[in-house]
Amino acid sequence: MAVPSAHEFHWQNLARLPSGRVYHTLSEVGGQMYMLGGCDTAGRPCPGMELYSPEGDRWISLPPMPTPRAGAAVAVLGKQILVVGGVGEDQSPLKVVEMYNTDEGRWRKRTSLREALMGVSITVKDGRALAVGGMGADLLPRSILQQYDLRKDVWAQLPSMLTPRYDANINLLGNKLYVAGGRQCKRPVKAFEVYDAEARSWTTLPMMPCKRSYGGVVWDTAGRLCLLGGLRQGGGHQSSKFTKNVNIFDTNQGTKTLALKTKRADFAAGFLRGRMVVAGGLGHEPSALDTVEAFHPQRKKWERLATMTFPRCSASSIVIRDRLLVVGGVNQKMRLCLNDCVFT
Image 1 (cartoon, rainbow, N blue to C red):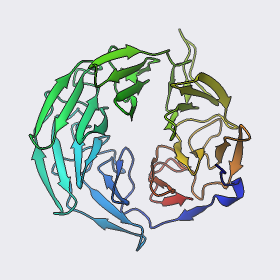
Image 2 (spheres, helix red, strand yellow; image 1 turned 180 degrees about the vertical axis):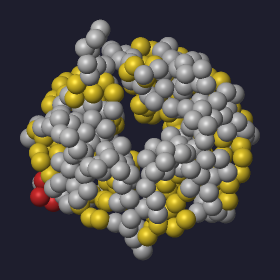
Image 3 (tube, rainbow, N blue to C red; image 1 turned 90 degrees about the vertical axis):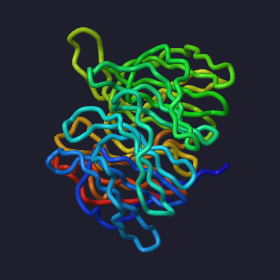
């Protein structure tokens, strides 16, 4: 299958955000993008919820979340958006679970988690949400796997992970849930495990090649796990260093290593029109990066693409209908970015 050339990608500036935001969560329902919570310019978690309408290129303010929060886990169950945990106004993890009905335009409280958690990773299988790991109020990582049943409004405990962690990267392939990396306290972990939903058991996979944080993670359409760049951390007193390493894990063919053109961390990443794309972030420059590159699968190399209009890091991104939307973040002056842009 032919992939587009580097010249076919371009950036388009979209409507500015109602307010600057970081640590917000993006979600898609029916081709529409929802932005939930996040921290404002003073670093306070906020309850805001906005809908981006691509038809009118405008932001629409929706009823705010009952509980202000940042870094929440979000799952889409039909026409409803489930919001789980995160960090509250007192900077502590939350156990509150709320659900927004996109048809009715209203919020409802749902059964809370058994304990307050931040850094939960979430996905959906067979109409049920699967919530993995998290960090509790004691700042210790958890190994729990929980399942939420929308019809019954109950959380059920499933067999726990082998490695406790939060902020893990997860992907569901058939009946198997892959969990890669994550953090324990402030330390990244290399653990890679898979949960078999039919056997209800966990299996250890080959550990990731290096400990890294603030890297990009892309699961491509073939189910390969791609770990991109980030801050590589050594042992002892060795300081963290930006890396351009790209490690790819294929469930059928094993692992291989590539290299980005630019060392970077804390960037936007996605799988777009047959290519892995990385944009912006931080590197060995005094300010945020605006450079963009994409991997050409036939040529087996990374190619430069059009630069971002607004350099930024700590942005949220999502791919909707062959468009990479990059929202908010911090710009080159280390101020919250109001600009929303799309890469196609």
